[in-house]
Amino acid sequence: MSALPILAVTSGEPAGVGPELCAQLAGRPWPVRPVVLGDRELLRARAPGVPLREYDRDATPAPGTLEVLHVPLGAPAVPGRLDPANARYVLALLDRALAGCVGGEFAAMVTAPVHKGVINEAGIPFSGHTEYLAEHTGTPRVVMMLTGGGMRVALATTHLPLAAVPAAITPAVLEETLRILHHDLVAHFGIAAPRILVAGLNPHAGEGGHMGREEIEVIGPVLEKLRGEGMSLVGPLPADTLFVPHTLAQGDAVLAMYHDQGLPVLKHASFGGGVNVTLGLPIVRTSVDHGTALDLAGTGRADPGSLFTALELAIDMAAARSRNGTPA
Image 1 (cartoon, one colour):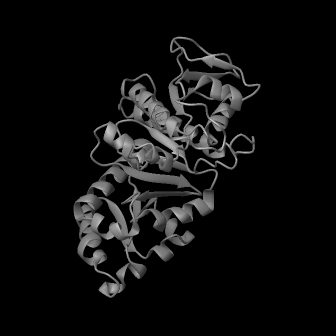
Image 2: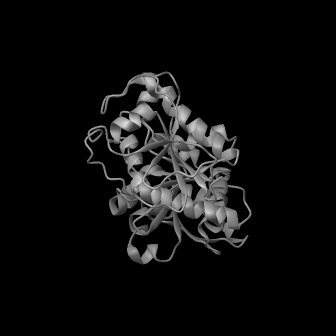
Image 3: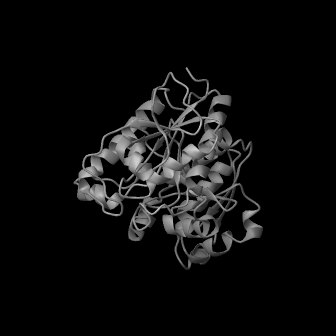
């Protein structure tokens, strides 16, 4: 058996850029074995000239080949054209990668983008990788964090309508989110004493209660409680000035209250090179920071930078888990 750790890479929505991005993994030397999960013929069509090798856990693949764990499509895939008939195929990729991670076959999983809408059109409720992996590992709470542009930005809430956000930020949710973020910064990122900058929910962090009371009644008390346990937490801070370089330099990570409060800033600084990380899972999972890019699918112009960075971060996180005695 190869001594290199094996990482599962799911090729994502077959009509998008995921398959061709994954094919480009064959062109670089990696200190692990990246195994791409996807339909063999789909990958062959999107990666002309790249030699494919069937995944064999006990074999050592030749350099320059793409190791493929074959999962058959539900229907022929056309670049740029979504088909609900392939929704269950997309989820089968995740299920196989997850089973391998939980069972110790894979050290981590890296995910190419999926299309939430077409999965829902197939009659399968799906709000994203983060929620799906939490449900299928029995994890009561996970935390979505993106890294890039010199920042780490985690979210207290993820894929919710904006009108639902205030009610979702309860003391229990916020406390558990901060505990997970703090724990994984130590365990997976090697930061012995993380400093976390916490955004307020309202403009100007509520302006002393004149623009909302969540900072006074929810966020502030939770921060005080956890500071009493030794956590280094700054906030609640006004989000419009939190992301200036001087303030960011004082923290190791930011906790934003909702999706579009923190992620536009990070993606502006790092789009195409950022990474999505799911914290709190019993496995390591990273992902690209972009969508399926249907308009680029099949053109050969899609940039693999985010996928490469996601794989590199998964390698580092899996190594940290191993050093800390946590099974990968």
